Figure 1 (cartoon, one colour):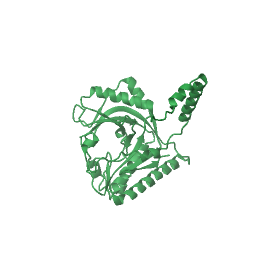
Figure 2 (cartoon, helix red, strand yellow):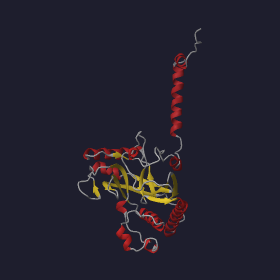
Figure 3 (cartoon, one colour):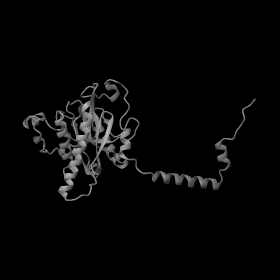
Figure 4 (tube, one colour):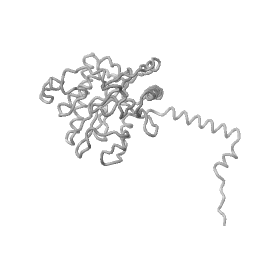
Length: 308
C-alpha cells in the first residue's frame, strides 16, 4: 500500500507565484527587516549573564586555553576576582582593530592570538584592568563587592559636589592612543595593547586608586604598584592614609587586542611601541568610547557598578 501523497509547501508556493504573491512576499520581508532594525539594544546586564564560558575541566589544563596557565592555581574556597571596564567595539571599530592586528601579525614571527573574536568568529568585549588578578576567600566576596560599590558611589557624589551640580554624568569618555607590546608580570605572555588617551578629569586614576585601596586593605596585591613603592609608603594594611595620594598611571591603561606566548620584542623591555602607518593610526585615535559602568567579576559572577 503506497503512502498518501500530500502537496508540499514548495509546490503551493510555486502555484501561487504570480506577480501579486511575489509582491506580497517582498513587502512582508521588507517589513520584517524594518522590525529587526527597530529592536531595542539589549541591556549590558544581559550580556553579563553569558560572558563566562562553561568549564571544560575541574583542573588547570593549559591545552583548553591556547597554552595559557593560571598565575595562581585554582583551589577550593578561592575566588578569582577582577575589576575592569568593558568595551564591545562597534562593527566599524572592529574593522580598524582587526586591520591593526593583521598588520602586526605580518611583522611578528611568533603566533598571535586575537582578542577581538572567539573561535567561532563572534565579536568579544575588550577590557581595561582596574585591579590586579585577585584571589578572594569565600568570606571576603560579599564585603569586597559592597566596599567597591560604596567607594565608587562616593567618588561620583564627590565629583558632582566639586562641580557644583546634582546632574548625573554621561560616563567616562576614552580615546585610543597608539599601539604597543606589553609583557605581563611573569613575562610568560605578551599583549598587543591599544593605549588610552584621557579622560581629562582623571577618572581612570581615581578608579584605580579606589580598587588598589580596597585591595590593599584586604591584604591583596595592587595593580601597577611596584613592591618598592609599597615598602616606601610603609605597611599597606596599617597605613591607609598613604593610599589616599593617587599616582598617575595614565600610560599604563590599555585595551589588549591580541596576545602571544612568544616574546615579540627584540630585547627585555617591558613595553615596546609598535610603528603604525599614519592613516591607520588616525583611524585608531578617532575611536571614542563611553564607559557607563565598571565590572567586578568574582568567580563566574559578574556585577556592574554604574559610573553615571
